[in-house]
Image (cartoon, rainbow, N blue to C red; front, side, top):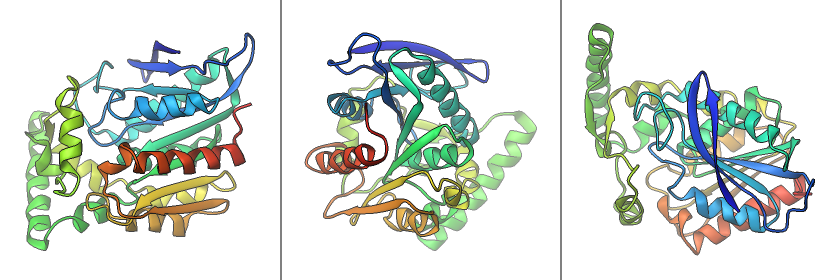
Amino acid sequence: MQKPIEFYSEGTKLKGDLYLPDNLKPGEKRACVVLCHGYTGVRSLYLPDNARAFNKAGYVAMTFDYKGWGDSDGPRSRLAPWSRIADVQAALTFAGLQPEVDKDRLAIYGTSYGGATVVWTAAIDQRVKCVIGVVGVGHGRRWMRSVRHPDEFVDLLARSERDREKRALTGQSEMVERTEVLIPDRQSAELAAAARKNNPHAVNTIPLEFIDQTLDHHADWVVDKIAPRPLLLITTDDDRLVPPEESEELYRRAGEPKKLVVLKGYGHYEVYVPPAFDEVMHESLAWLRKYQPAL
């Protein structure tokens, strides 16, 4: 069963959905997985499939939109990585208040840039008992540099500096096409375009502020703080948008227990559709069952 929810983060109203397993008994409490979307994602894009898969396995699942995204209130379409972490913490608090949820068994699942968000959240919030990151970003500057030619990266830095100065003087960031900051990969871009096409909340323009905020946000600085809580990282060997080195470096720096799964032959957006999606969920559920059983 899926039901709409509302809660607050830093005084801003966020919207989401709570997914309850069909076999939930009255008064029964289950482990809950809070799902976190990526760079320019919204909760209605990709994550409902994950939530239903977690439900089928017996877990309560929760999705939500960050401030300014989807149905949530707040300034529109800002990256605000530190504010996203606060949003996840608020989501954990709200999840723990639900009568169907055991507040001592909270897990978080993040995809793409959401992988960085869940790593940071788990590093600073001990309520998180299990962490799963899929095709995630470990180091914002390394990632943005790795998918550009050297001259493109120099131009990007110069453009970001000009926008930083503009923001200080005017309070406004230049709005640009999403693909100017998030470079599309030809390999799986068609899948992303098809998924976004029919989603009214999918954005096509974002502020250049995204550049500065990405360059300064590095999940691999804090990933070692998650241990001894379990961390699963899933990537693909042919991801050309967020290269597998991002997950590999997170794994190298993390403490035990940890696991790195490298799926073979898939690109970034292919993890959201079968057959890669099925492999992602198989690994995710195996990890949860081992360290965070639903019952």
